Image (tube, rainbow, N blue to C red; front, side):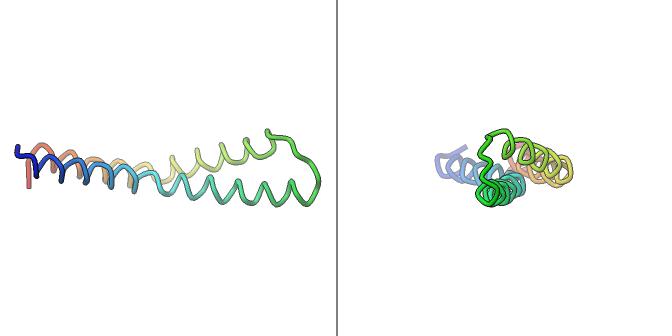
Length: 84
């Protein structure tokens, strides 16, 4: 494996890993934003009120998108073992 191939492989791995995390990160951010608005509107500033819904939402999204995530990462591993 040459230097250029290794750099390309690392770039692909970072992109694939980042892309696989995007749905969970977006869900966590959206729920955190919503919880922040609710906490600001009600004056209740308990950290657990924002944490539990965010945890549930991220868990649900990870389970829901798991087949897609696994396929994306398997595609990367196939690229590594077989080569371009």
